[in-house]
Length: 586
Image (cartoon, rainbow, N blue to C red; front, side, top):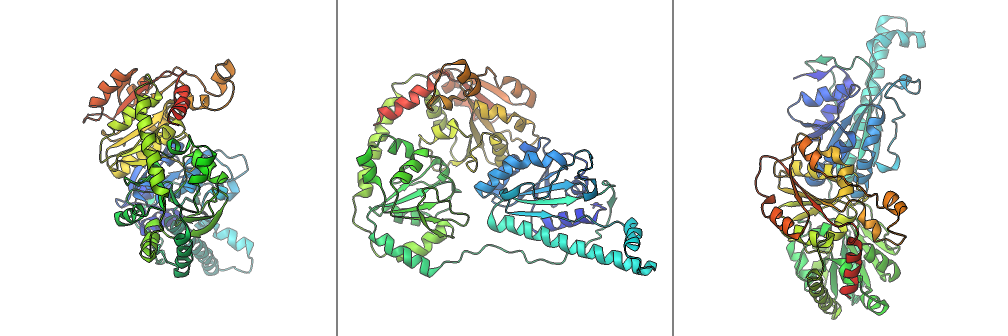
């Protein structure tokens, strides 16, 4: 086995191994050569080479999203690590353990006009949970400098002792910082940054380690139930006749079936879920927007909960946010291991437990189900909404709406569905997704950047059949994601191409003008065909319902290449059909 000659590089790589951080996504560069040498010469690590740093970071984020463990990205100095920033921000708000390992130049080479050099210390600001700025190793040649700085030390023996002492202090500091950063990423589920300055020569290798890190205790998170906290919530629970549970982004199988059933058996509870909640029960309420969009003031007052309990990450639906901010619950409690957002401006309590641990501690202490017609009333409304949606689908021509309806019915069972942001996730919210399909979307920052890279990283990590459903702008924006040697043959992309940002046509404002087309909707006439030819994807196309049905019939069949289906929809009518839908179901 070969190691970088640089002690700091050996320390970073060795402690990553100690912390069981196996997956390393590397972007090419020279300053990060010591780290690249260390990771790629050790069979413990699974290394991936992704040239585009922005794509590399989202690829790693997709892996960490699925593995639910830290994944590292490694880059050279300068602007390289700035290209990681969008994924770092997404990881921060989505609570995903992304570890950024950036190489840096020595301090004396910064701000003197040297190439590929920026101020990298704390570059991610408040968007990381920990920023470790490591110290440069001393070099043997610096003995003379030490002697000059301290004239009292004259003998070679004293100079060597001084040198070794300073290096030991540096080594101890670096080990502690690396350990704290990796521990934080794991325990608090978020991004961390470890910045490592390396001096030349960068490519020298040795056969033996020159460092011997002291053993660190690797901590695991333990949920601690606060009995008093549980008891205080029980009283509020028993007195509430209208209890609402709203679930944001959640990993599949986060909550045991017995607790879901017990919640469903209580007539005073309604459970609103989103596609990204990955939570299913016949008595729950997916499709939030179609439930509440047609409501008037009297309906909203009837829906207003006495008690609101929220689980999981961020919420997609703008309508439920607007509703709960206007018709605030009497008491709002959020349950999560990570940060509690005061989304509705009425948060009273944050219980720092996983939802399943909380329900396991809480529900057995519920002594009775409060008599209520809350759930039955809204189940009746839900049934009407579903019937009206079926009727509406029969009346409209080929459009984004009909495409999402057909596509979501076609996604294979027991698979992973990654969804792009903007219109893609909002349309997906309107349709029922089978329980066996796990749904993910980058809702931390809700940006269109990196969705394709995230989906590919997720597919690689999980080694499971994966479909990525996206709009055209998001896809073209992240087209370098296809510059990737790890895409499984089972990976499928469906691009709904309405030749621009069609979602902006739904918003208020002047439409059908050159200004709107150019600067808001950003009209284009691009096709994914040439990208597929360049990157080895099998390309399919559909321009109407019949063609779409024919293509979907064989689209998921086994193949020697990953596949992409581009569905062209009319750009001028999609907004009207969506707005008319909410009027129709009222």
